[in-house]
Amino acid sequence: MDFSPTAQYGKNVRTIVKCVECNKPHVLYAHHKISEEEFCLLQSFLESIEYTCSVTFKGLSGLSSFRKESDVDINDDDKKENNDGDTDINGDNEKENNNGSDPVAELFKIVQINKKHTCTLAIEKPYFVTRIFPQICNVCGISEGLIQVENELSYCEECHAYTSQCN
Ligand SMILES: [Zn+2]
Ligand SMILES: [Zn+2]
Image 1 (cartoon, rainbow, N blue to C red):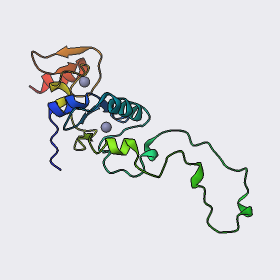
Image 2 (cartoon, rainbow, N blue to C red):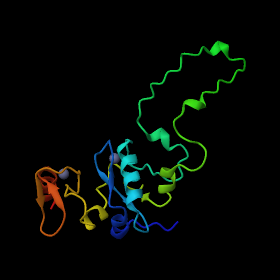
Image 3 (cartoon, protein in one colour):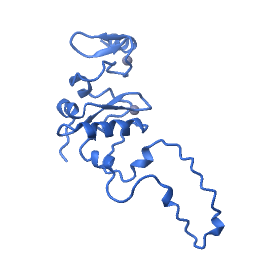
Image 4 (cartoon, helix red, strand yellow):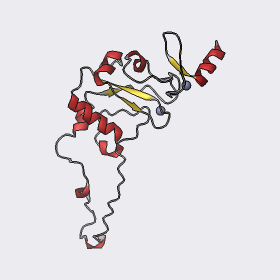
């Protein structure tokens, strides 16, 4: 898999996912432009999960484990004692369809994420190079009180003060 996280590939997907721990955005990449339909599916999936850095969506068999739907269907209407066998089969109440392919899993055969970017690293360059995403501090990712440094990246006041000290 020759995957290179370029700005062009980022533009093909034109969406990001934010890490819930460090609040930094991750660009999603694809080799070719995804369709409107795929985009919508992707968006709704991303909104349904809590992403953390270094998670890729590749080859996930159980994507449903990422969904944060509150599993409150407690099936205590049936006592387990009624079961003759030892194995209680409760796979029927799962919403996912195990037959055939999960459209989201299919989508992530096309769409990729740069897992090298962890919470401690700065935000990946393509986020800024594509110029299609909101301006944020390139160090910490916040979007308020930004200072634009010449033609380069944006910093928040705090990170800007910190980096100027170092120079
Ligand atoms: Zn993170
Ligand atoms: Zn900052």
